[in-house]
Image (cartoon, rainbow, N blue to C red):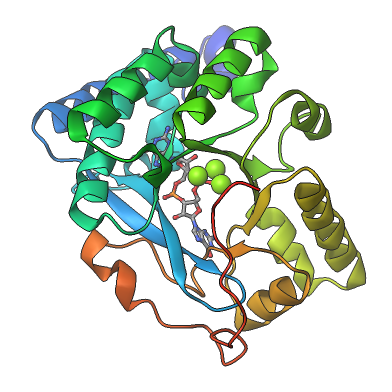
Length: 287
Ligand code: C2E
Ligand code: MG
Ligand code: MG
Ligand code: MG
């Protein structure tokens, strides 16, 4: 209720801190219930070889069916779950579901996004190892995507966790590359198997030669550090063609396939005649 008192005057039209917190709390409770009632699901988006268009892996993305509005998007509810601590259970659930899917397919690796908070929890590597054993899943079929946020603090712990995962045979990808802070220093401290270039850079391709030069440099950087390079958010055939010319290894984006139910993964259509040539398919194997 709007009061005429001066102190509240400027808060009438925007939610106060209290209201925002309350809203986030409510969303978290609903999300908790959705998780308990088995309402959440994972959809899968293909990553294709940039040379042949073959589906080489898939990224698992969380969905909250039935939740209307913005809060139903993981870009909103994941950060809320991180604030309230629910992310640990959500993360475990996602890992477990992804492993069930790997067991069903046993063909391509599945990538799971792991929140910095989950990654930093003591025993994260142990829980991944236990889950792999419980499900009898080949570790090389599991990819883990983390963002630079993981690495900003607790560097030693993060380094140890990464080493353990990689020693098990799990592949670790740096997600959203180029959007965080001091990306380059992290590349020196951590050995990633792959670099996922944020879609902001792919969109720059439309705006002249600078964007293209920048991408070329990022791809060369990734390769020089023994990483596979993935372009995220590829929306047009032109972008796919340019990325192929720039020797990007894998492409992901609406042009190659939208996130969808797992059984749709292999019916992905090739984006253009450029792809699907007789060139050798890029693999995930370590050099
Ligand atoms: P992300 O890991 O960088 O995932 C890529 C996002 O880009 C996904 O959004 C995907 O649907 C979207 N995308 C893919 N291709 C295109 C394209 O061509 N154009 C555009 N505009 N977007 C594209 P989504 O599914 O909304 O997920 C958003 C973010 O939420 C993810 O970003 C990830 O950080 C987080 N997230 C999603 N699922 C999980 C999960 O299971 N666990 C955790 N910790 N985070 C998750
Ligand atoms: Mg990701
Ligand atoms: Mg990303
Ligand atoms: Mg992201």
